[in-house]
Image (cartoon, rainbow, N blue to C red; front, side):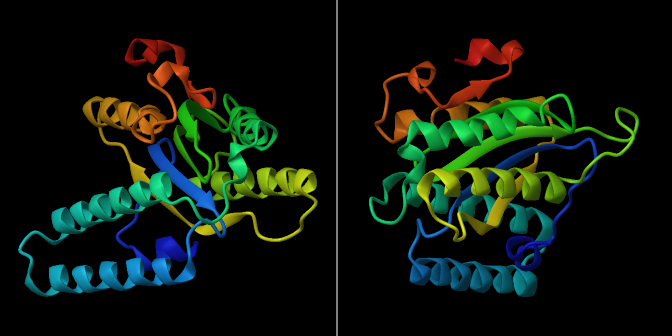
Length: 212
């Protein structure tokens, strides 16, 4: 279990679950900003634990607010690392995501930005394959392989992805459609293209093409 999951409980990753996951480049955010985010999150979490009458709902809402704040920062921060501006590196990430599609997971959508990646995927369960993988295992494999291949092109050997990641279990079709639009609209909000369909490093499962 990575640092984010240990710090930001409750957390639930069932086999067969449909997940929205965001992960970002190591070094794309200054350390002091991460520490500030952590302090703010922990402060609000403690308030909820002490005073909330609806702890689970309020913790869930806090997670959403924290994610949006971070994602907005990723889109607007010009400093740090932006390796995925390179088509060659973005392609490695895209190919790695597609590699597992149909093997361990069903890939619904992704959007690769210059310093972070959004992806929606459904884990296969033990009725679909003999040895299913939990989200933590799948993401570790995706990040490890893509990091190794990207570092080869960069001529580097250091950490490529940030350890922490964000993931959310998608509970129904309404939430799925909302998140699909959110991630595919990411480049539009960042003023990188005019329409969702114009972004080179986005993908959506064919049955949802009408969203584009």
